[in-house]
Image (cartoon, rainbow over all chains, first blue to last red; front, side, top):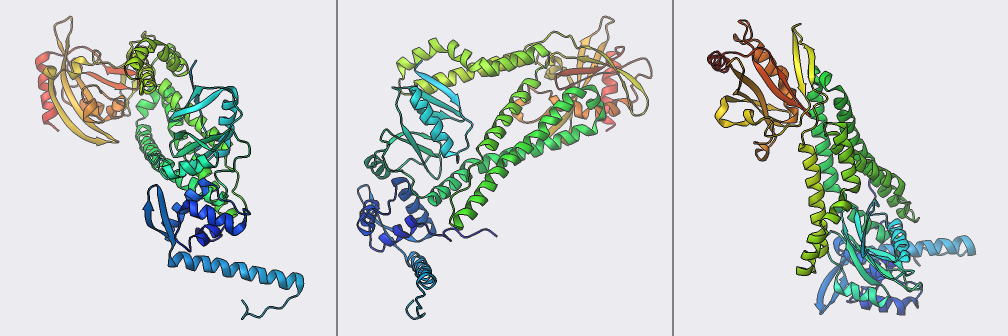
Length: 111
Length: 432
């Protein structure tokens, strides 16, 4: 059976969606990403170009308008849901790490 | 030399290999200017150590939006040229950040690109292969033919069978790469290595196959060699021949000078090949061959290796000489006509009637084709003549002309009386 696209989110995919919780263009995404991660995560222009096209096709983001050459996008409810799933996955992974390495018990309510 | 042309057999998805090749060329002082199919055109520039990267668009006509060109420029990358769906960028800065920073995203872009580039041509190739195989199977039924032209029949069958094998290999290698990479990416690993070697090998074989096919249809060893040389050196030779005209054209239209000179060179190559194809060759292979029909009768068949031209078959295609022409039906992919024409008057003053089988693949070729596969229908036509009341019982004989491959073959004997021939032909037609 073919696997679903975006079953696995890369850092760039995750952060691109995260940066589009507010309306923004490509340059805004790069700027927000830089501020958010302090340059730890970098998205190349080629990757950003493809990512925005892919997310548009999947319905994770929509265009909200243009300003000259700039095109503005924002996260859709589907994109937000997918981002939330990814976030929960990462939290669970972090919790499991803590249990295994530090023996820290975390109640499910905390998650 | 301002430009050079290099055939590059890299698959669209093989960006690492393409970038390495471009870097090597840049170090030698050549920058890509444009591409035409598998041929890359390089322009002379200063020797530089450059880095190249590729952006994939969804389809060939798509251009990189200005806003992304700006972003690329800011990151230190200059746009060089398009190559189908691949948009090529260069930088001289060794520390410039990569254009593509996410392998998974690049993979999806390449996958889309592969689909848009290869899906339709592969489907078309597969369809053509199926038609060729069907034709081959139809030809196999006619033992007469395969026995007369055994060598060319075996060669053409082998070529026909090899084509779909290569297409399958090519498609399979890409599909397997996509599936394997998808699995690896979903499990958090990097993409699978691109099957460069398989793809290059398959492309080379397919090119050789096409070359062999085009060379093999020549009707003499000398012409085969000449055709081979035309394909190897023809383009350069034609470029040289077209040089004076290209110069004139480039003065008039600087913008399209390169395209026009390439088109001229390709046209001259094609003309050279076609001229060779239709050039009458020395009839070294002509002679009589004996054919034993399934019912035990023995015929002498005259095989003439001269290529089919309008002059050869002029009488057969001359509308004034046609006694009758009848649609037999559709066989294989061809429409088949049976045609009776008045032929040349013999020394004895008799007129020969030639029964021909005319196959028309499409209206465009209607006047040019007494098709190569016409022989496929010879058995049917032969049976029709043999059972007719006029067939040689009173010392008269029909002449029977048809074509198979590079052979024009006729069943022949003593000439028949014109009136009798007409009557026989008419009664033969009426009896069906």
